[in-house]
Amino acid sequence: LSPHLAARRAGVSLEVSRIIEGVAERERRADAEVSFVESAGGAFSPVLPGFENAALAFALAARLPGKTELLLFGADALG
Image (cartoon, rainbow, N blue to C red):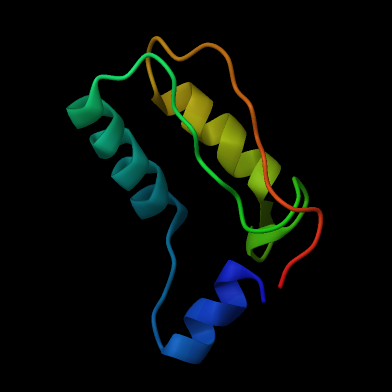
């Protein structure tokens, strides 16, 4: 089940800006050289309609200063 459908079932809403800011805040607190963010599904699985994991990865990379390398990992299927 994709994140946006799971959120709908749970009666909550997902916002890309909140996801990105939440990850960025955790990164600031952790002060780690390497970060891992596991995706739900593959690079082109939707986080929200019209916004896939690949787009989230690029948005996170742009938001995390000093983190120039990016590795997106996740299963190639949901479930």
